[in-house]
Length: 272
Image (cartoon, rainbow, N blue to C red; front, top):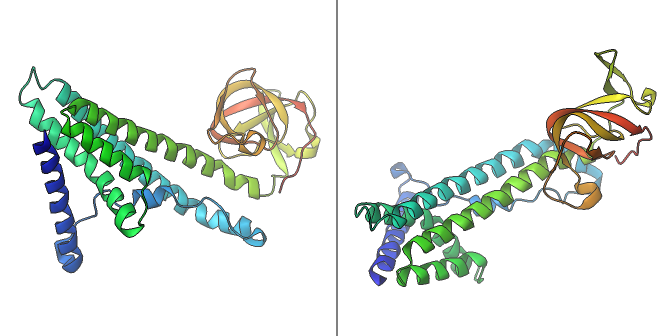
């Protein structure tokens, strides 16, 4: 049992030696295990000076989106590897060859977390959740709970992926809170979509909503399905799905989807 812990530690030491050699001789190449996903996922979404928040949010939105997307993909990648490890380790009694393969997948999945734990302990001199998780993971591994150890790793990566995904959706809609509302909207009249000024919209008109738009009026979903960022009203980080007859509120943001709402209140509130 402790033999497996020793193998994982030895594998990690080998990776760190290779990284050190790669840094000294760049021609050898090689990326750090786990990359900078921890740093990438913790990049701030805002916090800019009020006088320039609009321009800076616009400029940084693509960069932040790409960074969060890469972090989410990395977490999903290691989640898939740890789930494969769990499946292989569960079936190792029926298929003896599955045991070594599952352990290799586990070692591959846990190395990025060991790198983050080392960084927090040696560089930051802090005891963080990453360090605590790796310590407990090694403990369960030493006790011989192989499939449980791999499954806990999958849960951790899945949780991180879900967290970054929520931040991506929040970031996707948040920048619209700092921009001016459009002076026009698309409405459906006589089965035709027309663009008209916002101040000409009346109660019971049908307004078309699409991804990335701020909802201009309170209304009820008449057609379609959308995800709405209601952070400005409720403080929720996770977008809310809206289906037929669901209420929507002015100044919230459509994160994804396309729909038609029936306006119930044509008074707008300018938050810009």
